[in-house]
Length: 247
Ligand code: ADP
Image 1: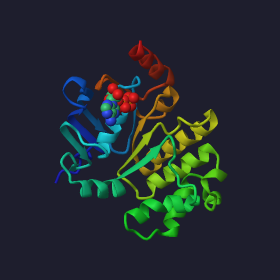
Image 2: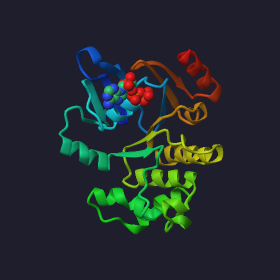
Image 3: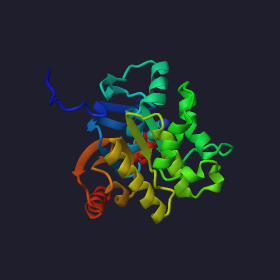
Image 4: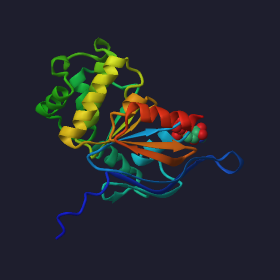
């Protein structure tokens, strides 16, 4: 047995193309993307508006089907998985955190966090829910409803909710986009510790060079293609490459 084989990437895309519409109006949102998101590592995806970032995130997470090419989550190829299978996968293998938080206003923080467990048909274990709320620094606020929490706290609840099923991959779409600088910093520090302390594989779309610089690697898209990557990025390097891309 080979004990030194590296783990498979958290997500892999091979020659992925996604076309919207047909014939004269067809848009090639992704155009032959080959990418591996390493396990236990944090990748940021950047690029000008319309470059295919959201489409990439959705195809990688099994929220959207590809026109051609293949997608794997861990060792499982999901390209042609049935809708039922993809639904199950989304409830167990992947977690989502969006800019808009998408918390349910009538539910407390702990009820919001418990929701993915209920959707996956599991009886939420209080200790499990408290453990993740504690990890995001909100144990004291567990009985609060979203409107009683700041934007940064709401995003941390959304991240706790995305993490509660212990997903293989956390997908985050502009998780700091709606936050002020201080709250954004807290959320990025939280995500960094999820990766460092819990090996949480994370893929994040962002416009913000400072957010991207918190990641281990930045992938740059333009016109549906990967045109650059940056390892161990600094804010200045990211801003510089982005400016050149958008020029
Ligand atoms: P980004 O997230 O980088 O702004 P998107 O992935 O949203 O880019 O979009 C990439 C391209 O695909 C854009 O030209 C966009 O207009 C197009 N597009 C995205 N979603 C759809 C859709 N549902 N129908 C038609 N075109 C779409």
